[in-house]
Picture 1 (cartoon, one colour):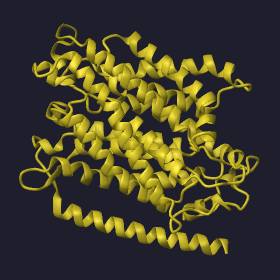
Picture 2 (cartoon, rainbow, N blue to C red):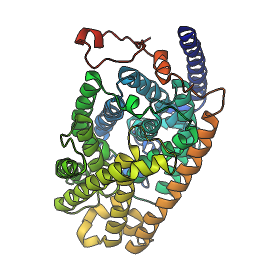
Picture 3 (tube, rainbow, N blue to C red):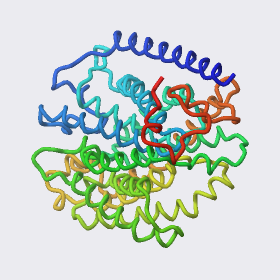
Length: 456
């Protein structure tokens, strides 16, 4: 019976993948074209985005780094569960493959050319990878409790809402959020949390089972941490000004990640009895430092500011994990599998507040020629620095409302009887993408046994 259920799930997943790919091919054939390098459709959905990539040859390196970060950094981040490690990586690849295509269409709808076409290029792919990162963050909140079909449908619904929120904030309101503290981290986290709440089902105590980690997930966490350190500074600065000026965003993200990682060693021994940090916790610490710099990365004028922000964000994340997560689970009925609220949600909100403060303090003397790139409306005289700060702050509740409503509706749809997973054997869903022993991964198994799993 178990094998029959897995086979049935594979067939349904195959049918959904066929339908979604056929749909995207038809839409690409009708609307998507390659455009000249000067075409504004190549730009990421940012205010005055034509100034974001002034060097013709810089588009592909940015896309490469952003894509590696979205696929490998987030993919390995979602592989810490002992029963789901390799299956989670396969699921991440599945989500990325669809989300990138769907994001190009959804974001392109807001930037149609007069000819009714969507012109794409390397910089468009950077924008699509930002959207994909938000979807993967949302996936972390429901990992291990949903099947691949539900994840694909969640992607189908989340991507257009992400594109809508991004367009409202970056184009209509003129918000500066180049690294995505608000549009990527906060939106993805709270969308996923609301989906998780809507999908909650009564289960026998499974927390210990979900947190079980074998040797493979530990290895994935180590690789994910390395990729974060290598590629995240480039990912966070992929849409910032590169016109010969010093790369503030790149350096600030590095400083913030270093400070947040050190802060994890400071507070973790106090909050947890074991005291020894695990690879996954170090990965979270690096993510926290990057998330808090998403909005403020290109605004900070001094390195020590990035260090202070990263240090505070890491402490906020650890305190949230220790004291706030149990409240979310017991009082609000939100199961947060990967702790996205502490790693992405809270740092994203803190990063938005830091960016708001810096926007209010921005002056032409301090920014010089950068003012036009960071705060174009202020540079043009159509908005004051305090006005820019007000709009930056207003963007926070707007994003949270859209994420909460969208996540709740998406979760309600995914929780219908026809789509939801049976609570009896959650590891069964991993068999849709890989072979899993009936008792899950054995931490004492040999390397040969651990490596015996194959993707179906």
